[in-house]
Image (cartoon, rainbow, N blue to C red; front, side, top):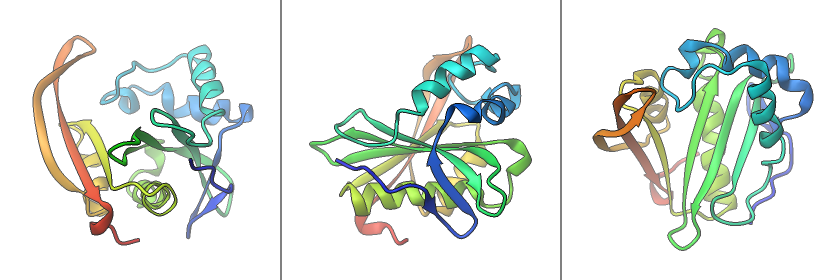
Length: 184
């Protein structure tokens, strides 16, 4: 089980649970076609964003496999919400997890995604005791691949046309890192 103390502070970011007051900031990126392009969902309307925000606001601890910690990524000096990051506990028996992240495009290219995701690796390895953490992405999403590579995650596989998403076959690339390979 893992119930972190919030907020989680990095050099430039605060990672905290979502609140209902985050709707405008979350909808600002979830409604964008360029954000949804490589994700499983289409750009979201305000009501759909609200529904998923309500769910995210409850995802603050890992009690058992299948649970996720889903946190707002905010700028430390202003408090502005710029995206989200998560850690999913995928297997208790095999001590495995998965990380993910989404940032508003206005904040791409500043190193915020790896900074936030690094904290998810730390939570998974140091606090939950995971052995292996993966990152999965649409194989065309080269920007996300660069984030995982900055975290020293290894590209392990590309599954060709393994999912039918938004009316087309897509390939998925899987990155991973073991606890023994990870350095904070």
